[in-house]
Image (tube, rainbow, N blue to C red):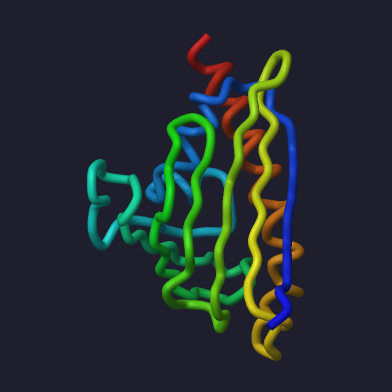
Length: 153
């Protein structure tokens, strides 16, 4: 089956560690994106937010599915570099896999957030919404990390 894809990129003046602190912790997602709350149903196999962790995110009213509760499982976590996850429930997609990649660049971090899933009718409806959500989340992540870097300096 063919796949649908959504990706967004931004560069932040914050260092990878600052961006990672936000993107690796579901409780912090409301600080930068269209989520009203986030948390964990269970910790990861070897670390609280690492592989095996099951997290939840409640979308805010302006998000793709109003007040939807997403449940995701962390597949991989390379501190300061990469976070991969799948969606277990909350949006009507099959075989959803997303990855956030942080790459150090001169004076900051390049952020790339990308996802793919099966090309189904419900998946195409979700794609339309995620084409708006992903850029907003990445832009918000970059800006929030910069603000937090400035607060620490």
